[in-house]
Image 1 (spheres, rainbow, N blue to C red):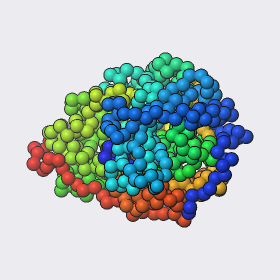
Image 2: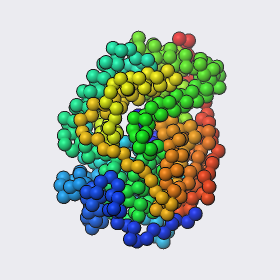
Image 3: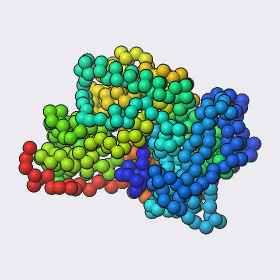
Image 4: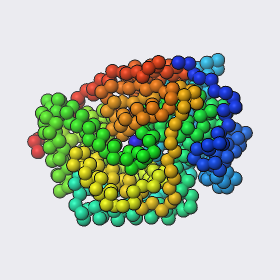
Amino acid sequence: MRALTLYGALGSLVLTTLAVVPADAIAPDRTHAPGGYAEALGAEEAAEEAASEGIRFGACPEAEGLPEPFECGTVSVPLDYAHPHGKHISLTVSRGRATGPDSGRQGALVYNPGGPGGSGMFFPLLAAIPQWQNLAKAYDFVGYAPRGVGRSAPLSCVSPASFVKGPTEAPEHPSRAYKRKKVAEARAYAESCARRGGSGLQHFTSLNNARDLDVLRAALGERRLTYMGASYGTYFGALYATMFPGHVRRMVFDSVVDPDPKKIWYGSNLSQSAAFETRWSDWRRWVARHDAVYHLGRTAKQVHASYERASRRLARKPAGKVGPGELQAAFLQVGYTDSYWARSASALATYLRGDAKSLRAIAEPDVNGAVASENSNAVYTAVECNDVRWPRSWKKWDRDNTRLARRAPFETWQNAWMNLPCAFWKAPSQRPLDVRAARGALPPTLLLAAERDAATPYSGALELRRRLAGSALVTERGSGTHGIGGGPNHCVNRHLENYLLTGAVPAHDAACAPRREPTARAGKDPARLPAA
């Protein structure tokens, strides 16, 4: 399941003193060379070359949607760090210069929104949002598209037209025949990825994303990295902290992926499916409390019955290209952010009363975004399948997901189908790095997490907190929105801003009160529509 986070105005999914590290800690630790000795040497060489060449920034291509004064450029990285003089690929980079006086400038703040498969090219735009303006005075806001994403040596596994399709099914307890069909589709997808990706496919990994981040740091002229990663961005950020501890200045991990090698990635996805069931329940209870607005039921059980009624109706007669699969995918968003709650409830209510317009608006496949969607899914699949050897036995997948679906039916099988190509993956797999940092090895780092986050369950933040000595955790209590930094919670933002501006973290882990619940409102009063 993709754990992608977008911030602020670009979507409804928002967004102790710094320890001194000795200068001789700047070079990679060749004794241990986490992730591979040859690759460590290659990464060092690539960073030195990038520091010499820099980045030639200029006007951004129209496709990026970044008008002046924002700037864009590229940085060259080895496809295979074990062979730094072999094939190189170019990563696209965006920058918005610090808006404050030069005397207060603190360098570049590099941002990744997650994925795998997400692009951070939009990040400079956040400087205009009030929650980010103080940070934008001190930092150049730097975003980039990781390898494989967007215009950064883009990956593709199938034709975009065949990837974005509808209507589709979404059985919570699939039949044997349906399972056989999905297994065949997963095998075909893996084979298509191997055919299209060729020998280079194996180099799209989280470890290489971390190495690319260090090359980008060097190309920006930064001696040490100031970085903020959300969702999946926390995982390869944690890899970076393990691989390049002497290159870290400040790091923010927002909505934390559990870095335990035993969880990467099969276990993570099972945990995620279980957590989405909890958030799905949160939404149903909220809708029930606002039955006077939506008329979907006075209890969570009744609201669920309304959703099931819509799913059955769409199975009989799709609304355009919206079938049960598209309905489930659209309502999965309520697990990512509660800013989606009111719109989804209104769309469901109006659909059940005869008007499918709002439902189609939130659920119909976006043909215009087919290329980006297919590319994002290809990168997601390649990175997660390459990072670790997944279970190859369909019996294990079937047993584990059948068991989980009994208590968490909403997302379990849809998540399994998304990841099942990894059972048939052709490229060589890697061994996950054991993320660790002893006390004093890193400057203090800051972790942000919502207690009821479904995409990256809260236990992951606790695990990373345990593994990075000297880190501090800020928890948004009782909330579940995925990606909390720079959002509406002033307490969270105060800790984030203080850390990035001063390097100080809370002396003890901090807790923030939950954000306000969404306001119930219907775009079109369901009570005035004819009953179904």
